[in-house]
Length: 419
Image (cartoon, rainbow, N blue to C red; front, top):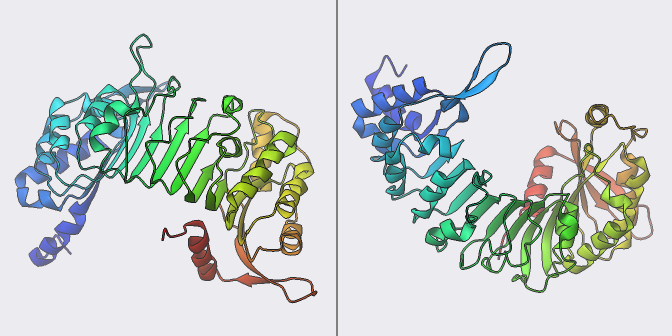
């Protein structure tokens, strides 16, 4: 209809230009040519994503090869230099894109309203871009390994300092060589959400620059987590709304403040990783974590192929004194686990086919619990919510809730609002 009616066309252009995804050089050239011919449309561009396929493509043949391709980087730089309302930018294989044109970095640095920036495979060019920004409030940065291992490491403090006063959210994947001085000299007074994925085992000094954090996600490499100190005294927080990550990383943080919601990643089912709930040392840390933080909501996953440890997980919950009200349990599905076990060539235990025992166990033994959510990743096709009602000495009653009610409860308990 927009092609047949000028009025409809004029009305649709702002919506069509608001969020743009460019996947191929052909798309990019068409986008830039359109914007050059219609410069009044450039201010309508608010969100832009540059996909990997813009700069890389598979060459067909007996041996498929991923090769670099060129694209109209200078054309894009010219358009972006006039995109004054650009607020969100995502670049996959960022260094590959930014190396195509130095004008791109200059154009992006001059954007007055750029608030959200995502960069994957970020190397020197991407870090150079970040260091020249001033308005970004959310930075999602996935760094690539440093190519020249003889060169001094590029620490986060080198590129975060200019945007530190404005940052509200930082999502950072650090390279292997990161050390305890990664954030030295940086202070982010307004940053409320921090997500770290790292293989570094020396994190003790990493958190002081983020005193206002209320939502913390930390995923540490399982092979180095044993090097973490048992407890840290330098953590700057008195309360957290959310704490999410793998159990080794969370337990090893030594957090002793109140945490409203704790989310524990399911343990890997391949690669020879042990089930932490079969390790007495980690079970003790799990109990200590809950007793120190006293969460009102908890999410965790367990494996129906590890029947021997299933009861232990929830018996620990029953034995730990806390204020738990909402329990979100992800049961790794039988088909998924059997597939993973076959790929790993590891003998699998007999799967647990009926998980209703869990509902009854929690209702009976975890006295403070009021709501249970149960799901079966990865598809989450089977998900339910239940309310526990207790009356005197009578057995607890389980009431199935509607999806709308369950989703509202999930938002309320797992994303608590900061007062």
